[in-house]
Length: 70
Image 1 (cartoon, rainbow, N blue to C red):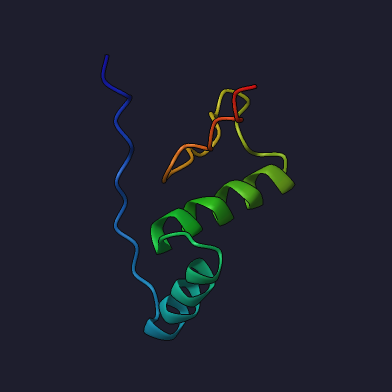
Image 2 (image 1 turned 180 degrees about the horizontal axis):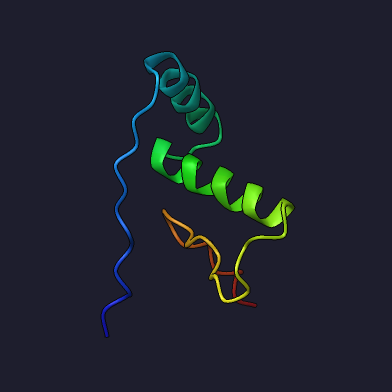
């Protein structure tokens, strides 16, 4: 089963705004794209406009370590 396709959007930003966003994303170990999605979701949620059926942002990277076996 293939995951649903994600919507692609062209976004034009002032270079200084992009650099600030990229630094912020790096500080939080995210890509600039993931940071934009994180911020948009947070703004939608805070304004009560995030649709109820929206799934959480998928976690990237290594899965968590399994607890040690006893």
